Image (cartoon, rainbow over all chains, first blue to last red; front, top):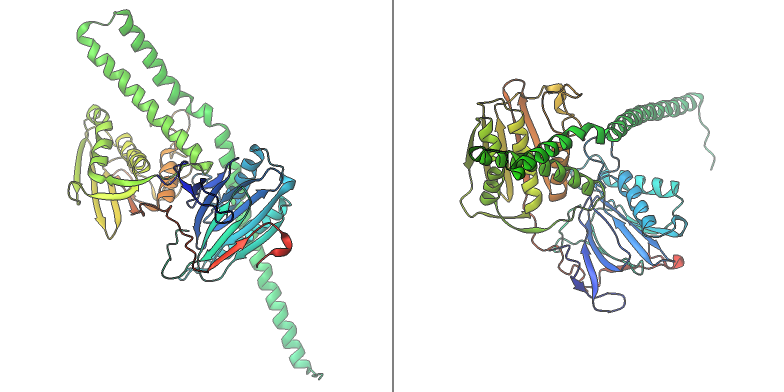
Length: 172
Length: 299
């Protein structure tokens, strides 16, 4: 029901009705030719939003840990897999790598976490994006509080909101 | 104002910097070692993956060959009437096996692509577990295994989660228990819900897993006993798919096992919220907009 493509919403930027909505869960990624409003909630997880300004196509991932080390399945739960797969998917949709621009969010440090996962998630994202020569044109990372994102994949715009204790519903 | 250092202070400072450099060098060595290990694992994993199709060829070919042969005989009418039911049961069992293996393969491909969408609904846990058992009941009977279910939850208990994923997770655990338990052994399924966490244990009296093998059982395509002479079927995807599915629905898995005595696999799944799609962007003035003009960056 959450992935129902007919789920319609209002575009916050344009006020337009009938934009399709998608809720992005941790370990998943999303990229479509048609515009969507993609919502996601980030704690120490990181989301990379890619946008091709020529094709007006956007894609987003949401990874939980920095590196896949060969254990278990190679899913986009891991930054190195999630970023490579998102770029691949964008290229499959007809985007050119040199036209891609990135926005980076998340990586908050969570209480009781000595591993600094948020920090390492952001580092991996920056390192891989720079290897692919994809510029990061906006970022809001680190800190102590989680974030909610709404990414408009048709315009590349991201609405971000810090989680407050009243609306805290962090799942990554 | 310039401050003079005494020779002693200078030496101390140099020593401090030298120690710090040593420390950093040590950390770097450590990191390189870790990276080498990761690299080694990746190389191995890729190798196994490229052999995947040839590895699972038998898993797919054998059931198909049986189904083709048995159904041909049935349609030709060469199967005596009293054997027909048995024959169709065999066709069903081979097709079931094939369907189950293929489902794991397709789900693992979806998971690796990040395309395993969640669909959270109200799940009746007892009927879900009953339907898993129902699908394996012939296999259990064929091996003369004793299956017991101890429900710590009342009939009709509803739990918010992804029913299809839970079904495949529990199917994989039960399928493994059946596969790795010798004829006449026993399997126990135990369920309970504790503070919004669903706990399901599948306990078998099977061959067990040695401690040194336990950390590798979740690796894809990994089976403890590999090669063409292995005594147990399967493609070694079941537990890696199970673990990745649990990641997606917010769960964990743990194993307790003693060689030759049996294994207990326990999953813990957090209840999910029914509708994550509600409007998270109420306008209360705490919004930040990141548009595309580079000189208009807010952060």
